[in-house]
Every structure is written in C-alpha cells, then in structure tokens.
Image (cartoon, rainbow, N blue to C red; front, side, top):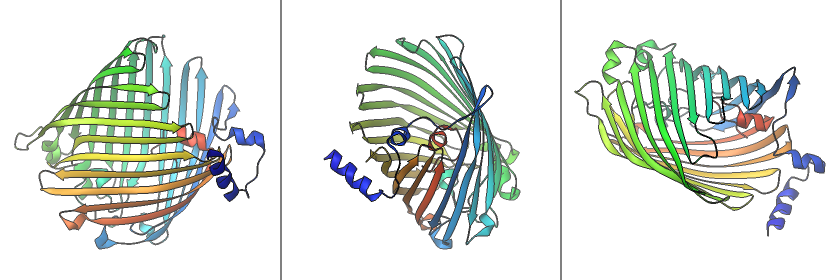
Length: 414
C-alpha cells in the first residue's frame, strides 16, 4: 500500500526529474558556503497569496493579493562543541489592494551554544526586530479590539533569551534556568501606542529527573513580570506565576507523551484590579505509526493579561496536526486549532478556529516549492470582533533546511 501511494504521488510530479543521488539529499543539512573559518547559509523565500479579509474584521472587510519575500543569510562558526551564529533577514510585503500596508521589516539576531564542561551548557539568543503589526489584527497582540488606524503600528523589539543547564546529558538529574527579556517600543500612532511600550521578564527555574530509561519527571516555576513605561499605564503592571509538575514518557522511538500540570496566580500591581487564580496545564502527544507519518496533539490552559488594561483572558487551546511524507520529496501537512477564551473584565467569550493544509515538493536540496490554504474564524458573543478569513499561498523556498533552523521571527513557509 505504501509503495502504491508513493508511485501515485510521484506520477503527479513526474515533470520534475532528478538523479538518484539528489533524491537522497532532499532531507539533509542546509546548503552552506565556506568563508574562511565561517560557514555562510543564504536565506530566500518568495510567496504570492490571496487573502479575502486582510484586516480580520467582517465590518471592514477587504481582500487583496499579497506578494512577499524573505531574504538574508546566516554566518556560523563552530569550535569543538560550541557554535555561534549571526543572522540577518528581511520580510517584504506588498498588498496589491492596500498599499498603505506595504512594509519591509528587518531582523538581526545572534545565537550561541557553549559547553563549558560536560556538565555546564549555556544557550544565548539576542535579537533586534524593526517591524509592524498588520492593521486590524488584535488577538495575536493581546489587544481587546481591532485597531482602526490610518497606518499600521510600527515597533522595535529587543530580545534576550538564555538557558543554562547543569548536569551531564546522560545523567539522571539536570538543573535548568531559563531567562527571557522582551522590550517593545512603538514608533508611530503614539496617541494609541504609547501605553503599549513595555518590558517583559520571564525567569523559569526547573529540575529534571529520569526515574526510568523512558520516563523523566520535571518541576518548573514560571515567573513573569510585565512593566509599562507610561506612568498612566503603570497600574496595569502585573506578575504571573505558574507552578508546574509533569514529565515526559517515551514509549518508543515513535511515541512520546508530555504533560505539565499545576497552579497559576496572576496579580496586577494596583489592588483595585482583580487577578486570577486557576489550574493550568500543557499536554502534548507525538505519535508516528509509520516512519513517514506523524501526528501531534496538544492542549493547554493558561491566562494572559490584555495589553494596556485590566482585562485577563482565560484560554483553553487545542491543536492537532498530521504530517505525511508521501515520497522523499513530497510532504503534506493538515492541521486544525481551536481556542475557547473568556475575557473576564468585559464578560466577552471568544471562540477562535483555524485549519489548513500544506503541500510542498523538494525540487532540489536547495530548492522547494509549495501551496497552502488556511481558514481562520473568530465567533464571539460581541459580534463587533467576529471575522472569517480565507487565504491561499503559492511559495518557493531556497535552502529549505536553513529556513527551518534559523531563529527568525518569520517562520519558513516550506
């Protein structure tokens, strides 16, 4: 049956011929070019898409063709077990039916992996992003309502992330400390965005202990602090803690289950605003019934404070995806996601749904093409925020493996 499916998929794409050696290279490491002691990997992607609701708002619905490309590269240096990389990439977006939303965004980032000894390992990521938010988009920004401005909100984001781990990789016990800083500064529409300037700190100590060859337990405490720079917004400063206990069980190379369950506490600095105490969890399962077919299921419960006000959003999120390699060159992915949330301070309930399908084809080790379709919908008991959105994209990706591996704010389409 497997061979029959492979022959069918291959027959659909027989117009793209290649050698047997190239066939085996499709899934290998990215294409790199030596540059003295360094290695350079170029990044390039181009896409043409159609979106029938670019502002994600049914009351101001507008469709448009969209031309995008990513371009840049990664310069890396390896010394024994240590690795250092510097990445630059840009994203250009041109809306054929909404030129006010055309932008070129820039990202510069550095990553390092340092092994001081076999027991001491440190990963550090630094980044600077000069970007903007699409008009109308509000859920991914943790805003209460869609933005209705003449031009998109532009911002600078500085990030610093570090993870230190103590203990041998093969040891039963490991200690870990994660620390993240995200600093947002908006550049325009200051009458609206000044109150959104903020810095977010997250510190997460953890302990991992392997109680059996296939079972590891973990204890973590996530500590989050958000500070607003505008005095008028400082009353919305808040802290959040998640006390988590869980573990990972690897039944086999093809089956993995993970769980973190615990208690969260969220509090505003101002006593006049009510915080939240609730249960919280992160659950996931990864199952590969065949070497070329994988299912991933996840479920999470958490709370998020909306930006610049006292609303708290309680959410239950679900996601299921299926990835199948029909041949070494042809891969499909189907996914579905659902979020049920409650905005406590305004008594609004939102139900967000998304699903899609992606088909990609590896022409060469350094070149891939694909097509995907995505549907998104928000239904609320306050219909002013409702939207339905359909988008279809054709894309071409140069050097797909580096597009997967490079830590950029724009996920590879491939």
